[in-house]
Length: 518
Image 1: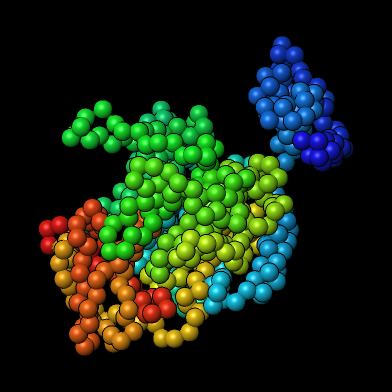
Image 2: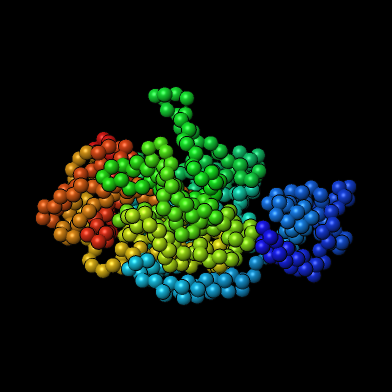
């Protein structure tokens, strides 16, 4: 700890000096003289003993002692009192810096090996929740921000009333890398929340859980009532009628708390997944852990430990990690500070078939809490989310497009050769254990066929990731494919069907629906 103490104390001293120039007095005020105006009588900020104790952090007490920890707590309270805005020049300058550093850093990478970030698209939605629909469009939803200063809480998590409301948009992905696509507002239904205010507003369905229904619809479960740190639906339980007692899973062997990390159901050939890779959630720990057969084993580590990160399955079966931070609203310099002391979190990581991880190019924005990523039907990756960074790096906060989308092109789109194509697929649901036909103009290029479940993601976890290979036989311009054996391998619903060539380059996907009744 000794090597960290001087930096922390110097930082605290610097903040204290700034506060001193603002003539802020941080002596606690007696409870009897408390006032609703913290600056009453121009005597400076008055901090009660209760306020101070609520602000003191146990970790700072342990590291620096009680007096220093209380001084830091007073500084934070004082800073919050004087921070009334966030300059547009700061947003613009940060965005310009991130754009420049991304270009300089990524110029050293070969797109054929590491992929490439191609587009950065202003969006009207923060996209804290995303779901790829069978239409190929992406449903994005979150909330209207209650604060445009990224050094304060931007979400209406603790707000009761009209401001605690949801919003949603549909995004049609672009056909090329110069088109931003199209956005369409699809607001949630207006409801009267049971908060005692009788103020109907668009349903505050952010911070909910969600999953696909067999007919392709998205089910959203829970939401944010507001107040008390974000009151809402707190439990989701599964009951097994066959054995009636619930079987707990064994604990991970690392024993560390995990803060919004990823979980990926690993591909298992033509069968459904039989193991899950758990990773991320701890910026100090790059280890990954596999759960299979009722037990945990340590898998190959990533290059970085990171929390708030998203990990996806590519059509070729490799994995991809994007986004990351230190903690909730924490990018390394404390809560609600959008600056990033360690720029490594902007780098993506790619995992090959042997489980080895390689660092790749940087995304434009650092993205942590509430970040998301989606595999699109054409094989590109949509990266979005993290309203704090989107607000902090907006070159025009008044534009109305206060969200952003980045497009990443994986290595398989830069490895040359013609992509396979799919001309037609069944328009009716496909049953389990059945054969079905696919028409293609490039039957000689179709080495593999895979189903990829669409992404529905929030808080770093896609609850539906699944990739299965399908047995394939050729017959002229028609391919004969075997559907999954049962719903245990692939639950009923909509999937993207990709054809891959020998190098793993995918076609543009077509949608098929699996149904036990077909």
